[in-house]
Image 1 (cartoon, rainbow, N blue to C red):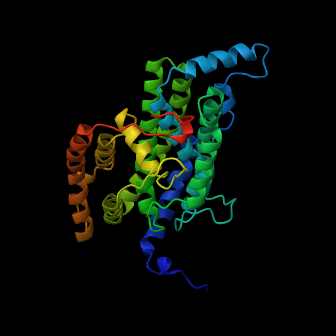
Image 2 (cartoon, rainbow, N blue to C red; image 1 turned 180 degrees about the horizontal axis):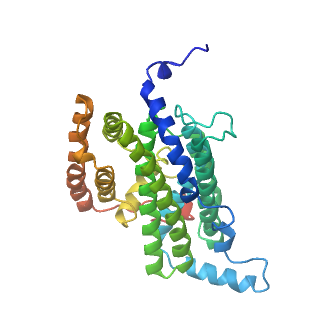
Image 3 (tube, rainbow, N blue to C red; image 1 turned 90 degrees about the vertical axis):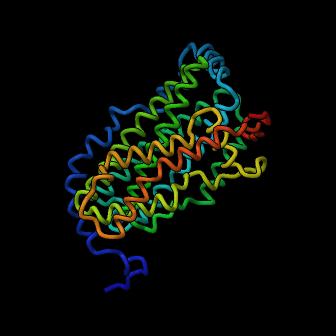
Length: 338
């Protein structure tokens, strides 16, 4: 028998039993959780048709609309796009999770089919945003592309310890966060008169909302089968904090690029500390966390900790909202300030 890694040596055996038990439910839900390639939108469908006879006028109208969004919104949009383009890191991470990983790259387990289908849908998000930004004529494309390459080279560590329970908590949270972020960009673009960007981000947010439902469904099944283990995992992730996927982004212009991007997103209302608190509240409610009974001692402590968190983050948000945002120089935006 091959030697196990230290992580596997300490991996609870009941995790295997639980995840095997819920796989049939996951397989049954796959057609609702993933859309077929034939029915889902594709990036080119949301772009001006450059193969048509009226392509010049279409391109000019596109650039006119895209000029209406603020520089701050464009900077946040680039940050969102860079985050989406680091997809290879996220799929690699998912396949580090024990029990549910894709064993050989074409595994037919429900888990493997999910992550490949999820990755295929997510890839379109970076594609469509990159096309939009390129055609807008407002972006320093080489600077943006170097940021993407740096982020993938630097990697991604959500600190889930190869634990699928913690992995499902992380993805449930993160998919809701990206849904909120893209939805708010869509709203702001609509207000500015950039209808194309509003439509694009609305489509992406729709995908993220469906992916959020999937991961909450997975973790909900874990809560049904192993409430103490699920609650302990929820508590662990919240104590560590949800590390954002683009945390290690960098360029040669902004000293702390991710912090600047996050501060700009907060200042224009795309994604804020209040949203962070709201996501925790939502997950507590969705998984009925406050009313779980029969928990072991570790899980009870985690339950108390998690249920007190939203109020703490709301107090934190009051302090942050009182701070005046600073203008930031983003190399992405053709050396303009945002």
